[in-house]
Length: 370
Image (tube, rainbow, N blue to C red; front, side, top):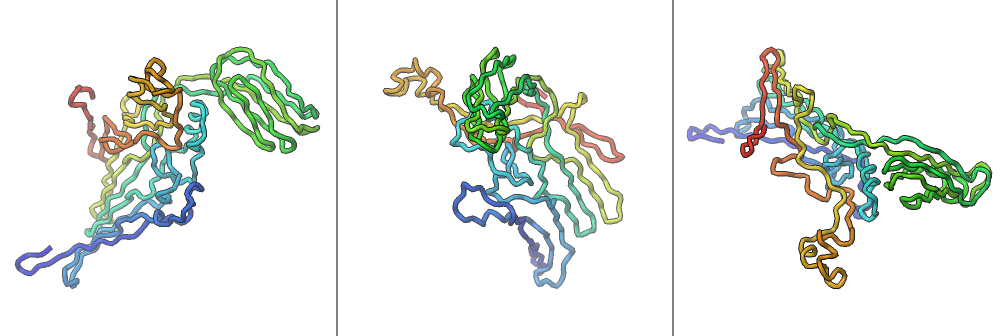
């Protein structure tokens, strides 16, 4: 930056890296990769004369120091946001899972609250500063939770009996959970249920959720290779549907407070941001929800059929191929939108210490809906 009088200034940008040297890559990545460990960050900006004879103090940028995992880390939540937990996907896309099993796996994800890499503070050449504080996103949701209610417990094999034994179990719900504990000695434990056979290796405990019609069933349980003191136990549960309405944490962060100081000795001016209506409900609108199961379908197949396998569209009216579906460890649909992120807020309360507050309300200009 210069003038005709010979005045010349320049701005010098100083960078460094966030670096993760402790998180290992997924075992599915067989090639040695290291370039994903680093992420660029701005450390400071300083104004100097072009001959470097004069300068002013720099703008300093500091960041939250929680670990930010490498870019190829599987430590992500539903929306692909990085977490501070080391984690690898428990769902293999090659494994066919039932809808209930998949939901059980996916709801075990930990939602990202990681502020690592986010801007924490800016210090100005004048001595003032701006500090940022964040909190997790929340949205108001209505859903059905399935709570386990134990209805029976049986054990086999501890007396040395290796034959399949049958038990009459009465199920009152449509969704059920089986917890199988198999002792270390002997073979696999087997549970023969209306939802399919459950096989549990020796020395392991497994919980399986199945869906079938309520009623009385004869359930077979076997422990081949059982010996005295070594068998298996099976716990039976009805998964009772319970309607839930609550503010639910979703991935990512929102600004909570911004603290400004004109100099190091000045009183802080704190701006606070609120995201709840008068009833205590979050005003967050979730634009995108992950999709982990998708039927294989095609509009053309629905219109004309599928060749020799399905010669006319009477067999494939919706375009779906014999109920085939895909299962993915990540969302099959993109979670980015024209809004930028996966969540937005239609009402935000902005208040300043000692200076009142104001509401920012977003209105749909087409429908007029607030």
